[in-house]
Amino acid sequence: MIKVVRGNPTPEELAAALAVVQARAAATASAAPGAPRVPEEWSDPARIARARSRQPGPRAWTRTFWPA
Image 1 (tube, one colour):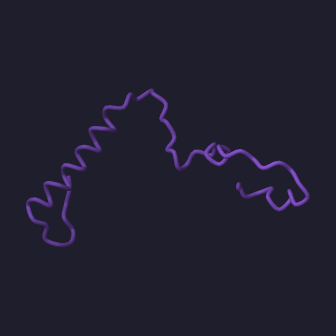
Image 2 (image 1 turned 180 degrees about the vertical axis):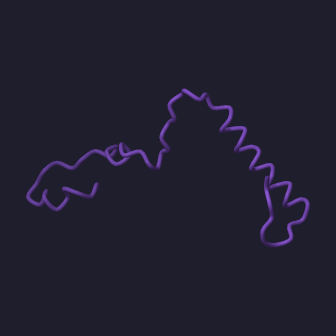
Image 3 (image 1 turned 180 degrees about the horizontal axis):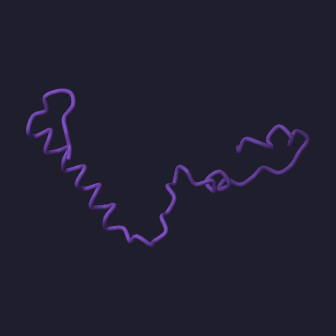
């Protein structure tokens, strides 16, 4: 059940909000329950290592933590 707590939405605004909620629920329901979920791109730790590392040099210790 969806309840409007604040404001006075127009019927069009309420229909748009319900369409988004229904689409999200349908997308979640259509996913296979046993299938592994693919991690989101932004949270993938491997994205940090995609850039080629710099070669070690005299000041290599300054670049040990932050990728270039």
